[in-house]
Amino acid sequence: MKSAPIVLFTYNRPWHTKQTVEALQNNLYAEESNLFIFSDGPKTDKDELKVKEVRDYLKSIKGFKKIEITERDKNWGLANNIIDGVTKIVNEYGKIIVLEDDLVTSPFFLKFMNEALEMYEDEDKVVSIHGYVYPIRDLPEVFFIKGADCWGWATWKRGWGLFEKDGKKLLHGLEEKKLTKLFDFNGTYEYTQMLKDQIRGKNNSWAIRWYASAFLSEKLTLYPGVSLVKNIGTDASGTHVGETKAFEVELAQRPILVKRIPPTVDLKAYAKFERYFRTIRRKRVIDFIGNRLRLTK
Picture 1 (cartoon, rainbow, N blue to C red):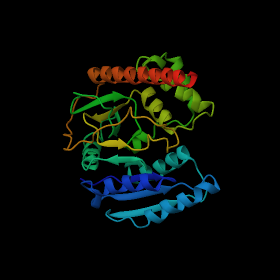
Picture 2: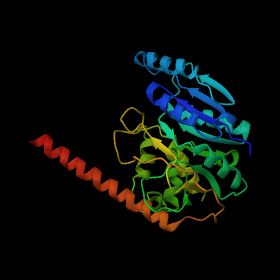
Picture 3: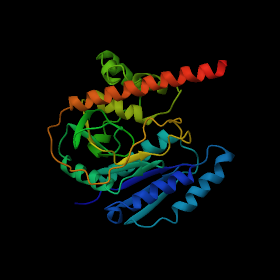
Picture 4: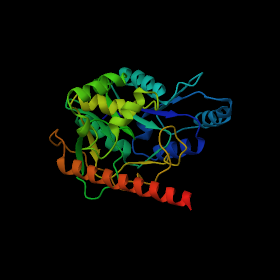
């Protein structure tokens, strides 16, 4: 099995970047993998020192077959940096594993990704492989959910070829086919609103467009039953994720068995996603009310 290239996107968070890289270095197959790093340029003068600190660290990295660093000479922004980097590498190598600078991986992350990429390479219904899964108990070893995801993922050239940059086209497709409720996991998570906000310039999320592109194309993503990725950027240090503990997980301490299963949505897993989204939605409401009460005292 030939290891897929890993693409890592970094910006101005040296501590987070180091945690991400060190975890990746401890992965099986790390030494057999090419690592491509895209370091975005500073947005303001205030960011320059942090970006330089990240870049100085990146130049010291070892433990991979090959390391290639692209230093953006200006600030591209998270979405443009990722879209350009993913497109360039996946078009050259045919498949890709993608991480951002706040994703800590289990030692078995690369094993799962590479094995799943190989197993489902010729299954057109499958658009991607995902490493993160929500803190939900009793999920199957592996399962499919419709759409695509963004916290430690992998795809092929044929999968990324479906990516649509124009959010307006995606929203029109969802509304025309009356799919917005299903897109929002039966109204339990505000994905449609995220897409509308992207169109209005309130966010610049590439991830919501990746999800919508795959969803409208009727494609599936393979998930592990136990998370192989932990997001350490939910501390308000990132671009799109505020401070929250709702997505905290314990990393898998064993390999996930990659097996061929029918390419259909796992309805039981889907229902568990819905229940989880309802739970965190209620918690947000309770926290909001609590904050309002504290502010009025």
